[in-house]
Image (cartoon, rainbow, N blue to C red; front, top):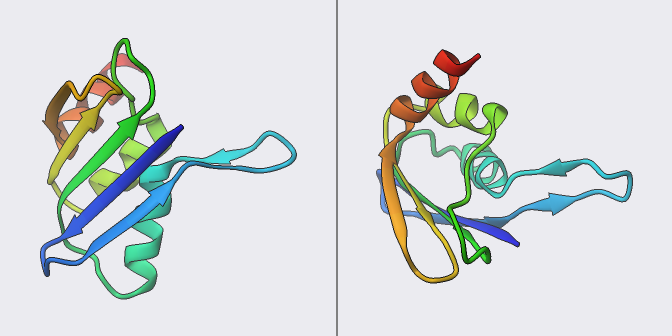
Length: 102
């Protein structure tokens, strides 16, 4: 299970969870949160927290999510696992790292 909470510069919070379709397709929690915010006119973000129920490692945004996150500026991404351990990055940092690995 993945969930996300997105904080806008205006102080509004948008929450979301990963959605899975009947045909096996899914949309990440972070993309759902961004789309909810943008659909309501918010396009500047301060931080997104992505939580997972995994106990080992951290939730990692995929390439499509990183591209979408970085398209809206350079803001904090905090990834948290079930043990409440977390790591924090900047959206542009993760997107640049992902592109270098391609």
